[in-house]
Image (tube, rainbow, N blue to C red):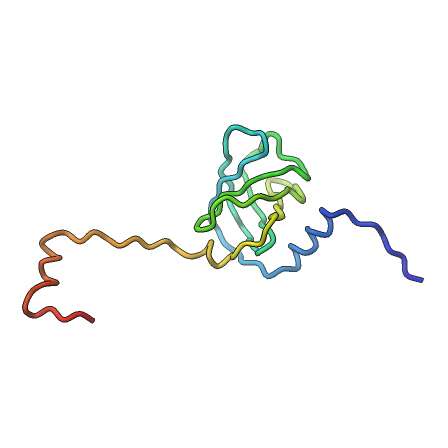
Length: 130
């Protein structure tokens, strides 16, 4: 006979997040704890569709396992989730909805403004568009 040990939803989500494809990266994100007036800047070290591993300097007041959070990810925006584990200066977040880690990694490139003296070169007799 097999023994089936009861696991909580948090444990199941954490196991799924650990087994998902993860991107190792070094970027910053803003973390909002439920009921907290201010956001906290955290370093995102691993990111998957289902969650992330983050680091923080010192302690975040009110950060507790099972607590609701919202993470503002670059190119994605605010993503709701829950804290699934807390370690020494690190913690894991399971997102409430999947995200695209590659979208978060993409750099936002803005069209540079070209000074007038250079943009005039693009209209001269020798200009050929590529």
